[in-house]
Image (cartoon, rainbow, N blue to C red; front, side, top):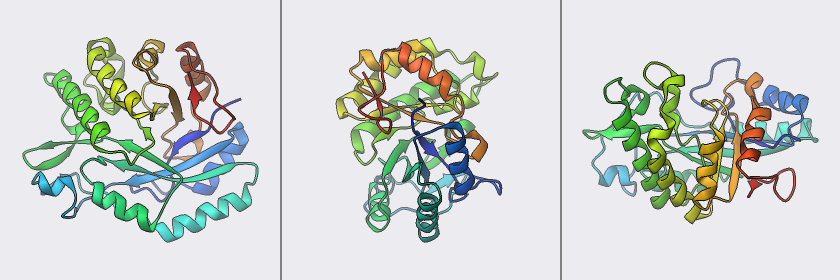
Length: 273
C-alpha cells in the first residue's frame, strides 16, 4: 500500500499554472490508491514585519519577488469540497513555509487566522548583501559545492531556530539545478553536512521528507538520517500538476524500506524506524 502524499500544490500556490487543480489532484490520488493527500501551498513573504528575523537582519528585498499570498477563504472552501466529493480519501490542509526561521512572526500571524493540518519547512533562498536570492540562481560550475555547503549549514540553523514545521521538505533542493545536470551531483561529498542536518532534525523529533520531484535519494542517504537518530519519514511528490501526485512513490518506498524504515501505526502515519 502506498503512503500518503504529504506535499502537493494546487491552484492556490503562486508557482502553479492554469492546469493545477485541487479537485483533479484528489481524483488522481484516489485513482492510484493513496490513502491521503496534503495540499501544502507555498507560504512565502516578499514583505516582512518587525517581529521577523528578516527585519532584524536588515533584509530589504527578495529576488525573484513573484510570490503571492494564499487566497485562504477560497482555499478552505475547496478543501471542504474535496472532502465532500472524495470521502474515501483523507484530505489535509497545509502550507509549505519558506525560510520559516526568518519569518516567524509572519508565519505565526498567518496560522493564527488560517490554521492547517500539515506544515512543511523549506529553504529555497539564501541571503546575499541584504537580499534573499533563489538558491538556484546562485549555483555555478565553479561555486556549486560552496553554495551547497552554505545551503545545508543554513538548513541546520532553520531547524534549530524554527519549531513551527512538522516535516523538513526537500533538504537538498539545489540538487534539482546542479550545474551540468542532476546526475553530476556529488552526493557523497556532502555527507558531513547532510549528517549535521539529520542530527538537528532527529534531535527535534521531526520527520524528514523524501521528495520525489527531486532526484530520488540513495538508500545510503536515507540511512544517514536513520544513523543520526531519525525516526520518521514523510513522502512528498511536490506535485504542481494533478498527474504528478504520488509520482515515483513505488520506487521511494523501496528506497526507504531498504534504509530500515517501515509503515507507521496506520496507513495515514509517517513511516517509522
